[in-house]
Length: 595
Ligand code: ADP
Ligand code: MG
Ligand code: ZN
Image (tube, rainbow, N blue to C red; front, side, top):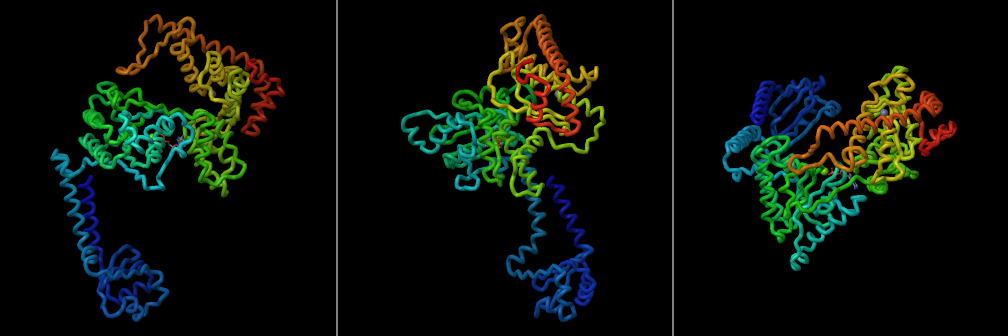
């Protein structure tokens, strides 16, 4: 890489020299008159000219008067000069000298760097050239613009509470040390991507007002083979020097996967890096006042050695936000945005069940972009609602052409989902149905979640199955056949049914037994007899068939409402909750009554 860069530089330089012409002053004046000159730079008595056709020129001027005067004396007028980038650069002494030798110095420097690089590859001591320097980024506590505190982290009350202990320790270590308290060295944040793990870690540093060193597991393993371990050493040393401090290792699963199993095989590099982390953590005294925070969304694959006492023995699960928390997160992210007066974040929160903080923050951002594109100065409620669709379903595909048949198919499919879920007892209300295609979907039904359910019982899960099969059933009843459309619905339904049977003990025939277990050494194990296997298949199928029968009965019974909804969708494309429910009531559909 370096070599290539060096050569192309030299090559470029060589070409440049060839093109330089040496006009006389009168020739230059002529060129200026013809508008052929783009720039003139005067450095002492050297004049560098650039022509429109990219040729370069050079001439020497008498030092007595300024070059501008010289040109004007030779008949160039001011207007002509104005069209030219005219620079006078009167550098003398060292600076000018340096500029002159820079072109020669540059290749030499490259050569030196190349040599260093090569010798490093050859295994000469890493101390010598410092390639092992950790590439951690440090956030200085005095850098107020970058400071993040718990106030920037919405929701996550319990998580913040647990972390406050570390803040206190970093702030008043003496108090803890004097009494002989053992403070955990490391804390592992686990949770889905975008739930705010990085944010929390930074907030701990911000609250405690200590430096924050962060590095990502994947960066350790990245480019330079054989430097992971030395980077770790370096990172810990730097942190100790600036203690109290926080070391944050993001994506620790990239290095901390359990050894000898799964992907990657025997990756020496990773293993050495991991070992070095363990060595450093073990060598830490509480008095070193450094706390290590690691984050991962795959805590199931972590090496058990990382989780032993004295290492990452504290684990904090960072959960997806619930309804209240989602609203709070949205509120944090509109703080520095221009919002219209009539904004109701609770509506947005209700429509975004299951989303992470990162998704919520990008909804606000998309809304801002919508507002700008519409030429407005404030973000309106409608921008927020459109942003939800965009973030979840991808951009609208207005240009996608549908045949009338496809459109009918999509309409009945979506109406099938909506109508059937509306009748079910345990289902969220339909927020809207639309035929506007987005991303991969030809149309979609959106649900509003009133509450966040932590636990679901068998009846609720069964209702979910019925709702998922709603599209499939509608297609079958209306068109007498089934398309490829319901594929992902079927996948979802099957997976729910499978979990009901094998994980939650919801099938009497199989019994109260969990047939899928996580095993720390081997990951997922599903060990059971062939008979059990057959039984599982039967039970899963039975559940799905019951759900199908239920869905079909409901759809046939309220088919008139479905037809009316499809007609409506064909004219207005999107039906929102109120209009939708009014229509259902007109057809005496028992909303939420179960049938
Ligand atoms: P993770 O590290 O868990 O993948 P991040 O901490 O990087 O997630 O979160 C990404 C972004 O999402 C944050 O920068 C922030 O803008 C937003 N975010 C996530 N959780 C929250 C929260 N609880 N409060 C406010 N913003 C959040
Ligand atoms: Mg992160
Ligand atoms: Zn569907």
